[in-house]
Image 1 (cartoon, helix red, strand yellow):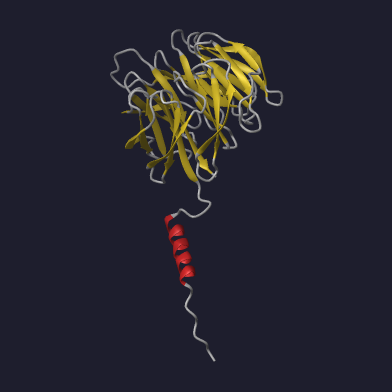
Image 2: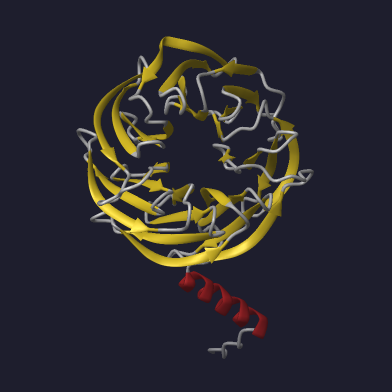
Length: 371
């Protein structure tokens, strides 16, 4: 005898429908989600955005700097390699590094604690192990290293090293064996050997990479394959390509081009530089013209071919590229806004998608995909 099938309970049907819809819409549990974190100097906070698959941004949080009263000149950010902690540098006294825990499911920030910085630091970055925080002081003409405690709070400075004029960026090599510091006012890049186990820095031999006078080396980025370095110069708008020798840490210039758009006539004020995760395209920002310039990267030679420039936010001090290499987000210090662009995956050209409000005087963008 065949018994009739009992109808499923309403709760079970509802659950099945919700599960099916979630799977169809791609928001099922475990799906990677991307977030953008914007450092805002004048409002002393971080704007948190959740990014959709199509590049649309949704503001989900404004995270204030607990225990900070005065605004600083800028707000550099760094995310630890394990994606657990975001650190913000505060450039008002007392100079602090504010640490936030990153919720692995929601991307939201919760304050952990504050630690001391050696000076007003224009740039911060962790080493590749996430155990040391490097920082560079533009006004103090120095670089420093601080240990990162297990909970993500920054400890007292371990080394404070005088540099040439206007240290601007202090970043580790891809293999974590060297750390390099740009000196904008002295037209040089300092090289240090880094012993990760001890967290100690010693000058390399030779200790200095010279660049042209009055060029103002500012920010730099390594090619993902580790064979090339790209350096933007604030004072003349140059973008220089170097071959990188990992064993010795040596830089050898192979090309010099510009971040200035065609027909430029004025005083250059170049700012930031980033490369796509696949290493095919490079981008630079320039503040006098409020533009972003795109370049195609030759995989074998490392040389650049200029694609062109697009207008962007007013005074684009900071921008970044999402982990998929499909989108770029640029912020304007004077516009209090962020514009998102789609990156053409064939040509590298930028096309504007949408603009969003941020906090006051935004200058730094970090992307993170979770989990």
